[in-house]
Image (cartoon, rainbow, N blue to C red; front, side, top):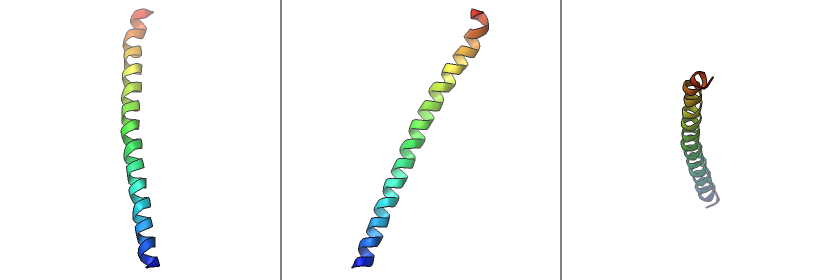
Length: 50
């Protein structure tokens, strides 16, 4: 029984790890897109503004 509980614990940890990685990836993509559009707009509007 102890080994079964241990396997369940490991599976739970893996699920938490995978969901955390997925969340970080999604948030990272959104953040990257935000920063990219921000810098892209700055790059396009920068020379005109100066």
